Image 1: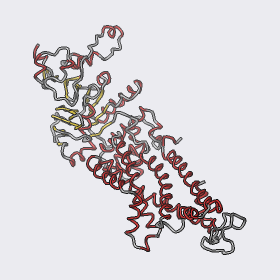
Image 2 (image 1 turned 135 degrees about the horizontal axis):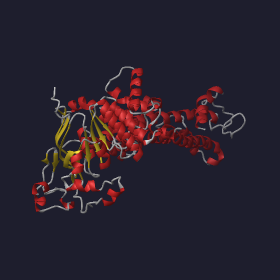
Image 3 (image 1 turned 90 degrees about the vertical axis):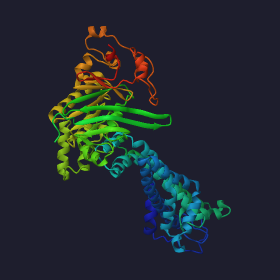
Image 4 (image 1 turned 90 degrees about the horizontal axis):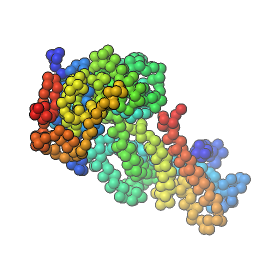
Length: 260
Length: 322
């Protein structure tokens, strides 16, 4: 299902020659029909094209934002958890402090430090979301590492004289992969949602699922143009649900104990 | 060159302390012993007596508060560079065959890792050949080396752990209860393998166990620990034949005898009384609270480990009184 969503967002607009910007002033506010499967919006743009192209942005932001946050969170959490003691205390207080600041405030702050032309670029949104969302990941990884570092195979690696970096990357982190993957997939969903919220505030991307949902909500009454809300929501919901199943499946696949 | 009768590993005045919320736990308190080349020293004691902590302190896994550990005369405590150089010669086998192997690595990479870390072999093929030889040394089928640890039984896993310890061709192996997690039938196989390897490869063992029967089978000398201290060190025959310390006596009385007639006549010396809290500062003999033969001097004087008979050391006032 997820694959279907991803593939259709990536390929369909190209294959069908859909243009999400072309306006057809005659065919405005049309309900789904044969020529516009998902209907058209108030400016006569094909809504199917907009949902699909918006999906590209949403998925990309979710993926890249998550990668950024997994990367920072994992390394930070692993270092804090492995060295423990004072290092851990200092590093986790920083995390606690950042937690105390409302994340939306942080995102806006990060966005405001960027120049105008950077602000609406996808890279800026990736960076801002990743920089804010790594905190929970850091805590999860730290907790795992803290309990794994007293495992006998970690002690065995120390006795054989392996260096810390090797122990962290060969012995500790591979055994944290389950929670990282599961939390990571949930994170994709969270980042997609966060981005749509940002779009609503005018800080996110120009066209994404969140953006479409936000625009549809302005229409009054919503029932009169249900398709504006229904399609992006259906895509968003399907994607988020699939991501959760995917997380579960990946965890099983990564665990050699369940492998036959 | 060290003289041939010099100890290979010598531990003296070793103290390990853990600060906790309830006070400082004195896990190991002034432990001294020597390991001579080629011998097996059994280290026994009940749970929490500091056996494993002693071994872990020797290899630098827990910080040493006081004392010294020398390998071939080279001090290892407080000398990270020396400890790192000594690592290949001083290896350890862990108690739990399920926890001591990384579940995400194949047997081949587990056994080969020490060789990679210390750059002992060049090239994949050479590494693979070494791993196969090591697995065969510990009696495992080398064709299983691509598998993961969970596909093996406890005994097989312990052999894998042993192969990993042997990879660097160590002089000394610290065996931290290597068979206590195994079935009795498998225990015997692993013990025989250990004995065989010791002879063939000229190894020296520190064999930790809480089962005197197992220790009797493998040890040349035995050291008994109680509450972080050594209470008796003697040759196996002296210790089993004529123990000096009442704690040793009590432990021996708990070992079942295979002969049913003798077994029926066996009298157990029960250990009553409380073990002092590990955070407490103890005046006098630490075993006093559970000792049936304690007298007035035990309450005031802490007995030192003394050689009461040739080669038999005990930390007790009794032999001096009689």
